[in-house]
Image (cartoon, rainbow, N blue to C red; front, side, top):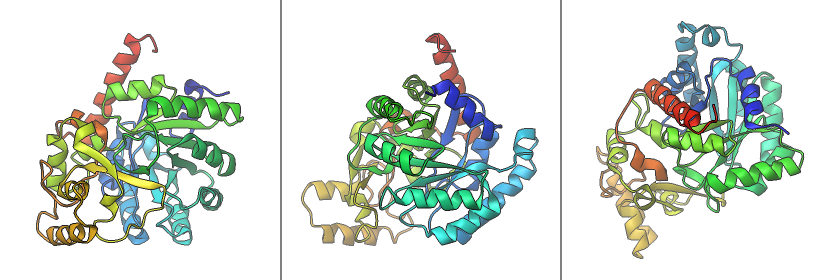
Length: 356
């Protein structure tokens, strides 16, 4: 059965520009566009663009990324047979027939699939996307052991991203942190004869200590979302970013709830999912028993303003997606500096523990 080291070698075969440990930005829809993804890949990580449902918008971002990479002085980037980044797709939201031509035309190194209405939908997507771009690898994000085994068996992904419950944004409502999820999933997949599939970890990872922990748990790489919300290249409202920097005690400053997806109207997300946001007035009102209709009215009034309903200190009405590791994030840095600094911190910890 494959080990973390063997998985890392396998990933290197189709991500030749990357350095170890493998660090990735989460494909945050509407936040992780070409500037962030290209900066992460150029720093030796795997950058991801998080698509929404507009494929014309995604094409614009991928064209920008391709132009950036063409000008790269890094041989492994400039000569990569695939576009040296990944693209995330929300399976429940995007239309496969619209996604296939984009993947055919741009050939990203990885497609990251997430949030299918039914787990078996991943098999259909994986088959079609492999036909469209045989060199593109298919990754699937899951949040529990049962889903990991089911998807591994049916969709045969090249890697699974195991998302722990500390993650910001959307994930399985019923889940566990990576400290228990990753080892159990690893053991179960191996018993089922599926141990060859590489595993990467996400959820609450915001610095080298978190990455080192993920590697010690057996992951081949680590994904960070909230940490990159404090990057210079991310696309977020400045107040959102300021709120990230000011948040403390992430387990108290954030909450998982379905209410965040109901602020504009009925949630469009599949039943299994909720989301983690900073605590703000809409959540506080919900916890205190205010009616959903009144919460929605106040929210929709607030987001029409210049501040889009965002505020620091829990005083806004709009959701501010962030993970439980938010209290670790204290400054805005260039994405390349985040990758390099976290990588060096991870290496120092791993050497100190005798892993390197």
